Image (cartoon, rainbow, N blue to C red):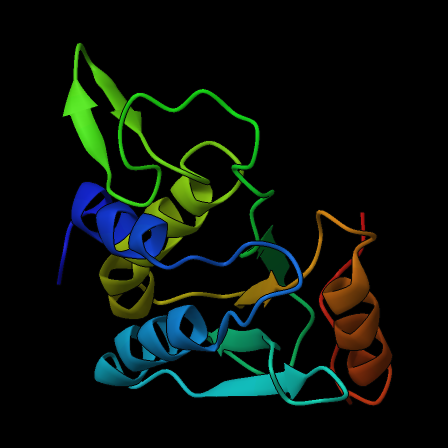
Length: 158
């Protein structure tokens, strides 16, 4: 399994600017999950060009905790980048790349922790929810929440 920096480099390389497809990034995450035996559910937007991903680690019959993040980034137009924003730059104790702080860095850390999560005897599940188009109105999260209303077991709130 890759470490968080390696995963972040891969995530940053996907141009997931709002209103563009995030499917390559979602496929990458889904493959990482699948390699660990974790099943995932995709909830697409209306034209099937973007998707939310939902997965559960541990027991599926009780609420649990949700780790949630969005996969889209704002456009780089008009910004003064001194390097390719879609290639992770390391140095001076920094990792610089489009989305590295909001929120691809968080997602990379969650994904890097998956082997430990799957190896643990979890008493309560950890749910993963990664959405699209947060930067332009949380459009993906709304679709995901709508889908979750039909789930028999939902993550715990509060």
